Amino acid sequence: MRMMMMSNSSLSPMELLTGNGSSMQPGGAVAFPKDSFTNAMTKNIVAMLVWLVLNVINGTMVYTFMKHRVFYEDPRYIMFICMVVNDAMQLSLVTTLYVVSYIFRQIHASVCCILVMTAVLTTRSTPLILAGMSVERYLSICYPMHYGHICTVRRTFILIWVILLLTAAPPLTDLFITLAKEPPEFFSSSMFCDHSLLFRDRSIYYKNCVFDGSYLSFVALTLLYTYCKIMMAAQAASTTLASVKRARNTVLLHGAQLMLCLLAFVVPSLQASLITQFPHLSLEIRYVFFLLVYIIPRFLSPIIYGFRDENFRRYWIRYLTCRAGRAGRVRPLPIKVTPKVK
Image (tube, rainbow, N blue to C red; front, side):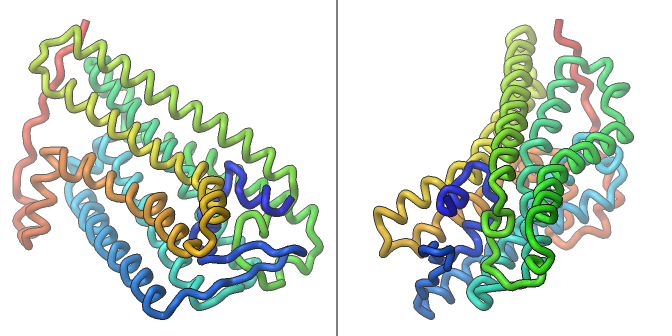
């Protein structure tokens, strides 16, 4: 039963992060095969370097966004910076957990609860933010005359709050169920920090399966619908209409991001199978999946808007080349209004 709980489709990031070679033993004990000092040092240095590089990139993007009114009054860039901040939070959390897991094998259950719930929140927010960004691109291409009335700054912030409330609901219900089912001393004990060990009730597993299946299906259908509508607009418009092509490619990249997000839900089962087949490579398998699921997808957000968007790139490069002071005096690129596609 416990092994089934550890490989369900709604696992949090903790299983990959803090499970550095750990395995369940009969009776619920956790065994910890030790990594060599050289391997452990190399893995942690690589993880910290990647975290540092991505956080520097994300930090400069946030700074560029905050310094220029042309960005923080545009719903498109507000959604983008929301994605960047969410990625930065998730990356910082998972990297910290990965490094700390080599130092502390067990932590206080209440601390683990905060970490698990935050990790679940940031992980589940990403697909919904992607859906919002795809809808924004769809509206800008298919309804350009009404775009300014539909996509306002106020409505964008309302959407962000709705996303936060939706993604906070599952971990909060996990907590309430655990508080009702577990004894009072449970949260004062020390434990190996893992979602399945913290939220052990079977009803949580079924609840999360229903929620994950529903909201991931909604996001996938949203991306598919917006992509098809933009493709139809591209066929009806001139083949040289650059804005339509960029919007189509952006939605495609959002689809790639969604596929990478889905890895967080399917990888645990695959990882458990591979570790069963190759137990001597369990540490390496976990590390590869850690990079594949939580590190590589974080590179896509800067690429989609930071490098591809001409207007944002102009300000961002000026800041990166130590000319941020003069960047504030540069006039924004003219915004081209896309003609309505009939």
